[in-house]
Image (cartoon, rainbow, N blue to C red; front, side, top):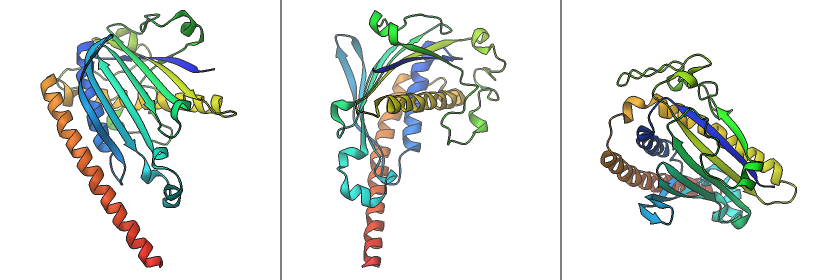
Length: 273
């Protein structure tokens, strides 16, 4: 059975602010995670319009080659070492589909998001069908209680319990009831569907995917909140300019790092011959 879970993440900001904050945080995190011959390749970043509305469409390829040993890279096809991500940001509704060319139809992660000015109490924010509601599990996430991935160290500067915004005066987020009292407030509703069709492994892998997705959401929103003074006041035009600059820097950085890694591998191969 496909594993469907809805994550509800309350944030101390307005719905209209979150669009800028999210895009800013994604651009910044993409740059930070690019290096070593891997990183993020932005294939498309353009407006879209379809039957569901209009917004911004992005198509990204995450190159993971440097995460595996060289001998493995020599044996496995390049498609194994790539994650493809398509996103339709028709804010406040967004959809992201993650696939892997090697796995084909056997692997897919679909995330549908809705952003509402509430405290996480909307029962069916994404208007999903009754059959999905029957199997959906709900996880009310508190970003002040978790630090993200298990192997990531605690970062004091990203702790919402300690952070106070100089520009807005918001924060710190303290006490067990902060989600019921903070102003302004909005909630990200994220319905995640994980599919991994592989006999004997499906349940375990889909559970692992959700664990990783939750950890990444927590980490992302902790960073987003602690960067309030960086994105607050930005216009959408400024944000799009930042995205264009980030795309160029990502591609150049990825090419430079890949060239260095290839040169190092070649030198290593000569030294052993």
